[in-house]
Structure formats: C-alpha cells, structure tokens
Length: 129
Image (cartoon, rainbow, N blue to C red; front, side, top):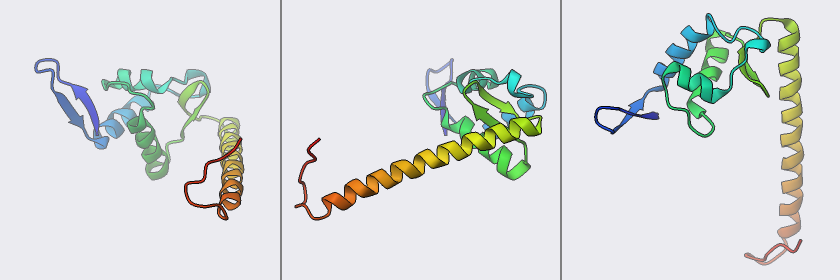
C-alpha cells in the first residue's frame, strides 16, 4: 500500500494498488506517449495525486500490471516511463532488458564463485580483500 498524508488529520492513508493502476491507465491514454514524452516516476506519482517515495514501487508494480495484463507497452529508460509507440522504441527497451539480464547473470556467477570459495571455510570466517 502507498501511504499518503490526509491533510485534515495529518494521518497516513493506505492507497490500494488498484487506485494507482486506475489512475495510471487513464493518465497514459493521453500522456507519456513515446520516448520523447517520458517522465520520471516521482513526477508521475505526484501528477497522479500520490506521494512520491524512494523507488516508487507502487508505480512500477502498476506499470507491470498494465504491461502484462492489458498489453499497454509502458516501459522505462533513463529518461523515465513512457508508452512505447514504435517498433524501434520496443526494440530499444528489449535491448535494455537484455543488458540488465546479462548484468544480473554476471553478478550471480560472481557471488556463486565467492560462495563456493567460502564453503570450505569455518562458519563466520571473514573475507580478506
């Protein structure tokens, strides 16, 4: 749940993901069309009337739901979130996903190597760098 402050009381209010999805769905119908109209997550949250926070996980989750369940090609890049309008924009996003996947796999392999080196050591043994 997103927590926003109710101005009259100063109390936190829980906002269900459905509310974020609903507002985001309506917003992307007329905004964020194409990479040139990308917006950062915090700006989108504020525009939708929700407080921006750190990684804006609710927005990311809502965007994934729109992509996976409604086939709205809401994607993200360095300039923010946008609805991909061309095959080139989709291909660029796919390349970005592939690069991220490769980076994650490389990190995973490195951590596995470190773990495997430590498996013969006594528990609690520290690393020496």
